[in-house]
Length: 342
Image (cartoon, rainbow, N blue to C red; front, top):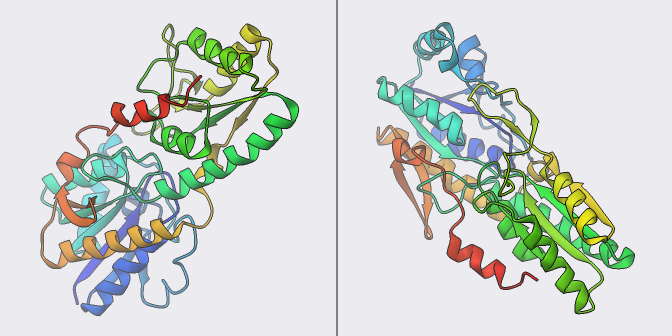
């Protein structure tokens, strides 16, 4: 019996279990044995695995997170770790591996493929910053959570006549801030792609108040930065993939707004709320389609590819292209949001 491995790496997000379920159901139907690798690439380093059958994936479709666990482990960080990955891939007797993740997880998958291993990918990230796919699963759930939060903040902002600053995730791409900000009727959306001019932000808020508005909602992406100055970080320490830990820009923006305008300002950091809980119907369906496509690529032996949404179709794209650069916000899209500023 042929074996296919499945792992989930990087930050968790709603829809991961939908991909796992779909891949397992299709694999079993085609006579494959499925090996679930626990905690991302860490599981391949430590040979930590479990067999996945139909019973294993029963009832997991509406669950957030991942039944396999995850980690931000980078096996290429240490020579011994990547050596163990290569050895355990063969020791497990895997004919192929489905890697479900974002830029970092699929970057490792791409390197392994170039070394001759049979690997395919499925694009996961709430940040929606992977190239070659219109949308990544997890993103829709995240923007729905943020939109609901903005809706709730509107009522308290209006009642207390405050400026509300909402800091959202997204790393170096502003997709979450942009789409949730538009959907939630934010009065200002600040994204990493455009350096923040705090004077311009404050003037815009003052103009709103001069028209009789008594409150404002400002959505800021965690990766946004001021025109003069560097990114705001929670700490200088880098993770295994060389990323800084972002966070704190919301408080800096809030402090500046209150100081420069005199308007009472409050800051809400949504943090991991954005990536938790049950997936939306859209993410369940998209995750299911990606899982089926990933297993289809395995059956066709079309390795080194990633399942991708382009238009309404699920297609295969090269892993190399998908991880070559971040997909950042389209400025034409951002210009739609700017119509509603100030």
